[in-house]
Amino acid sequence: MLKLIKSIIYEYLSYFVPEKISYEITGHCKKCGKCCNYMYSMDTYTEEEFKFMQKLFPAYKRFYIKGKDEEGNFIFACKLVTPEGLCSDYKHRLRMCRNYPAKRIFYPAKLHEGCGYKVNIKSFEDYLKEKSPDKNKTTADNHN
Ligand code: SF4
Ligand code: SF4
Image 1: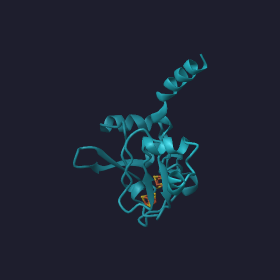
Image 2: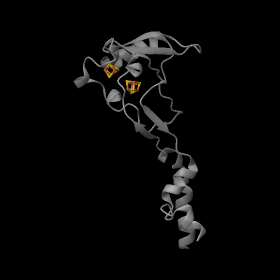
Image 3: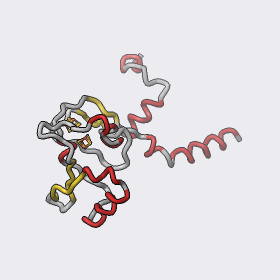
C-alpha cells in the first residue's frame, strides 16, 4: 500500500520536474552594458503592445525600441544606461535589473556575447545526480 502511495506521489511530482530545474549562473558582471542596450521581450510584438505595457507599468518608460533583429523581433534599450555601459540610476534600477541574469527561467537562456556570466544548463541526469545519496562518491569509490 505504502509503495502504491509513494508511486502516486512520485508520479504527481514528476509533472513539476521541469519547473524544479534551475539554471546555474556562475561568473560576474564585467559592466559592459550590453544587457541594458540590447533586450528582448517575450510578449511584445508590436509598438502598440509596447506603448500599452508602458501605460500599465510606467517604470518601463525608461525603455525604447532600438530596432529589430534579423528575425524581426524588437530589440529594446534603456535610456538610463551611460555611454560607458553603466546604470545612471543604479540605486533605483528595476527588480528585473537586480535579478539579471535570472536564476529560473522557462525558455532557453542565452547571454550576450562577452558577458561575464555563464549559464550552466542542468540536464535531467544532473538533477538526478544531485538528488542521489551517492552523489559524493568518486569514480574510484564506485569501482571498489
Ligand atoms: S551583459 Fe553581462 S557583463 Fe555586460 S553588463 Fe550585462 S550582466 Fe554585466
Ligand atoms: S535601469 Fe539601469 S540596470 Fe536597468 S536596464 Fe536601465 S541602465 Fe540597465
